[in-house]
Image (tube, rainbow, N blue to C red; front, side):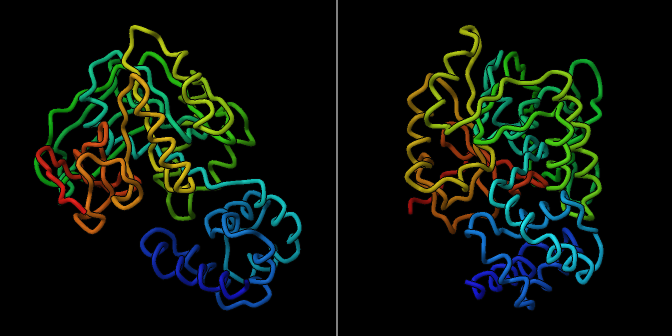
Length: 330
């Protein structure tokens, strides 16, 4: 068990942290070489000992964002509390920047829109019409700016866009709802602190973005329901206004579902009178129309009703429009 912990943290330091967080690289490398720390984390099941979760929980409990030795001392001193908290938490990224990559799909849907997000956390991805977008080219030059009807937003989503720009428009959202196993309330200081703890050290722009998005959500909270998405999907969808187009989004959540539940949820979404917008790894499911070759193309696939219209970074930092993409069959 401890060997599995060591391998997971070594892989995280090698493959996931470079370019994002020097501090998390240091901590993960330290854990991977530390038998005592590996033994503590081996008390958790695989799902709850993920490095981003353990690091966020430790920070929330008061661990210093400092060198590995100081962080290690805190975790060992508070090992029972860290293990207990990790066991009841999950990673809830709730990154609004993903909406930049979803904008071509959302803008293609005739409004008004009733937006229902699966895995909504605090619902920060339920406000695509309340954020500003700045689309830049490979060298950073501004290619397109979009603002809400009332003017520039305190939340500015900046993404690098490769290739041609598609026709873009701000979606008209008239109803917002989300389903999550453990929804977060943007008005609750503890929930806001948890989302802030999930931001990696060094991601200052992301921290500011999420803080500003939390204020928008707190001023106009969405409907958030707690439970399994497949169980609540149809009843929640029935609450949407009849004169709005229902759009169900699954931004970055399907990867956390076991495959049978993942496919059942996709089938449930398709059974609704609704549009479906998602961003996923090509090999994650079979919901693409036509099927995708998992090794075909860079980045994640952005799709509207299963049809791929763009490729993107999983968190929306870049995207590339593929209006005429005809994926190879696997």
